[in-house]
Amino acid sequence: MQIPGDRKLNFEPNFTLKSSLLVVQDKVQYRRKKILELREKGFSNVSISEQLRYSLSTVEKDIARIRYGLILQENEPYV
Image 1 (cartoon, rainbow, N blue to C red):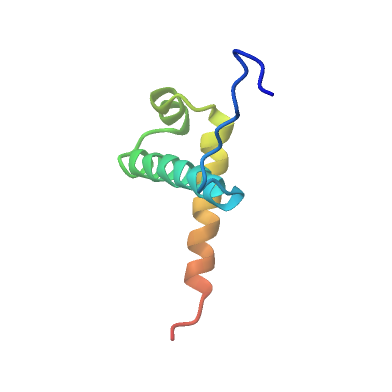
Image 2 (image 1 turned 45 degrees about the horizontal axis):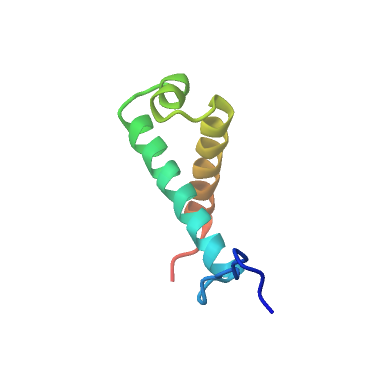
């Protein structure tokens, strides 16, 4: 018996934890791409954080991760 006004929860059938993580990863990749574009144009970390409306620490962490990723790529042997 269903109570009037009671609604069933409607979950998306294709929703999985993996699919939700992919959305988050896409957002992070997009943010890092924008940060990298502005760094290449000569913007300071403070300017980037103000323009993109992210905290300065987020911008600095992303730049560090980008650099770390580039270092890892340089050290990989060519196949």
